Amino acid sequence: MRFTDLFDHTLSLFYPKVCAACGTGLLRHETTVCLSCRHLLPKTSYETYNDNPLARIFWGRVDFEAVAAIFFFSKHGKIQHLIHELKYKRNQDAGLFLGEQMGLELKKAALFQQIDYLIPVPLHPKRQYQRGYNQSEVIARGMRQTMAVPISTEVLYRNIATSTQTKKSRQARWDNVKDIFALKNPEKLAGKHVLLLDDVITTGSTLEACGQVLKQIPDIKVSIAAAACAIS
Image (cartoon, rainbow, N blue to C red; front, side, top):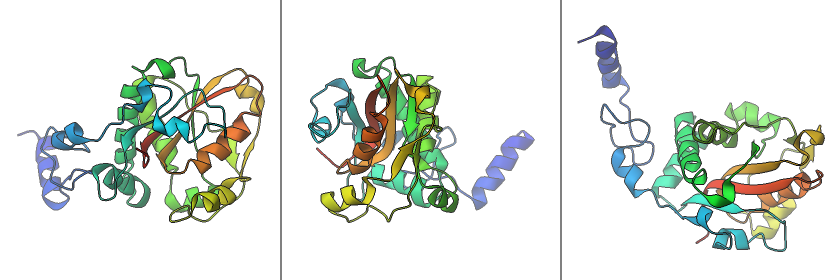
């Protein structure tokens, strides 16, 4: 046995690697998510057609080119576990995995071709400092590995810190985010097709607020993708 293999084996005795989706121990050839969970993740296929249920929630609100979430979000489900690992347990590998899976699906979808930039929904600097990273940016990094599209974090920013959206009504969510995003050097995205990214879509209020600000840029096209949605 090589020294590196012996070291990995010894380390796993004290810090066993477990699946971020179900919590069972990973086999030696598995990474982040076990093979069983990979086959059972609940895909939406929303990226394959334009008038999907998720896209409809934005009709009359913001003129997005295309809207999709790759997985369904359900309470206590595998996707919820992955996102919880990413947002609250500092498991960035879970976010990279979600981003990679998103990229694999979107690069096959006709609606999401010729994307110029990936734009993660920004966190307020104070919140990002507390968490250590922006979870949407981690997902974007995973997508970049499979889509080969650059990430832009320099134009759209959050200028007001807000309270969590959890357990708020749709109107309360909108009131919480409607004026908190702004632009700097917007000319960098003029005439581009950008893909706005988030972890989970519920009411869509945050993405709507981001989209309205981005649509101020001349000739921009904006599409949306999320790892998951709570809308079926």
